[in-house]
Picture (cartoon, one colour):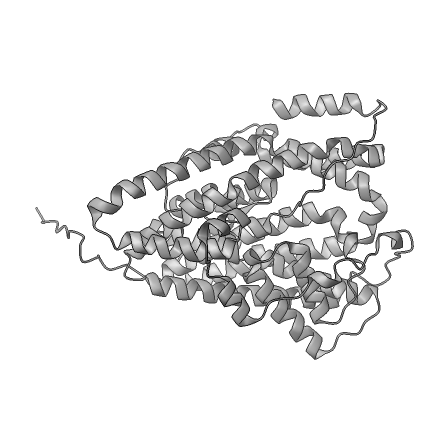
Length: 469
């Protein structure tokens, strides 16, 4: 109802003359801030209730698609005047970002505390990290292959958008060394890490603290964990309320993007976008289901069907953090994953499992190499795979996605001047890759749960023996 009312108001104002206003820039990509939740059963959340509505117009995924189309049309009609809608997108983005840091701290502590009592904690962690690294590398390889087969950067006329070329990002693509990354993960002041939103440092501290809590006696840890879990419940409630305005926020983002860059910029990268969507579909509906079919007893068809709900939320918010409640509910209740596994794998994957981003980096590298007529050798391809894989897995510690794209391009010796061409569709790219990212998280949870088998009973847990009657 709110969205319908808003759309009518927007249509009424299209024909009015508006005064141009300047608004502060804001980041549209949230892959950096995708974060953690904890071992909760997220039943009957507001998100799930929205998704269960039979009326298609009440489905948030349908609303977002309508908002994207309407935003693009109004942005094309109004041109730069469409910037009047940019605050709507900024409000939506900031509302989600507002929840990031507190949810990182309390949710990871809860998840780590739950896993800390498990005998298979080390095995779960090892398999999970290995899975993330392998799937990210496969995603980059698929992107490079499709880039060479379909050649999205060949024959593209950039004469109308050459004014957008810029070298301002050239100095922002340097990746830290291995030891610099390791040392940088350890916070010297955890409160400063929270203030600076350093996700990797928050991850390390909260994981350590959560495990420490799990080692305390039950009477000591129970009150603390109850408080932490209550805070996470409150955060999830807030996320559900923020999602109500997701279509309005997406409308504002699309109207401002199209109005600022125009359709000329969209046509330049349209072929890249089509190839990118195809690669995402192959990885999400072929590669992941095939892994599910091979490594688990869950059928690929069941997995694909169950993932429709979290994928719709991911497309709406472009945030794995906002999608986690639904992903947790689906993996535990529809795919049969144990809570102890899901509460660790899914939050961790929300930060470091970025197969959708890896595909994006690989395709963008090939696109610009073809656009600037650069022949990539074997060394360049290896550099792209390594840089994109490490960048996707370690994205939480990097200030923004554009900088990782710069790192990948520089590693392969590809000019970065054309990078602003991608900004027009950045929001759509982000929505689609987030949907693949959360699909990979869920697949990982199902596979890990199947590989670790039945977890032995902890020493301090009572063993109940049922007598036959």
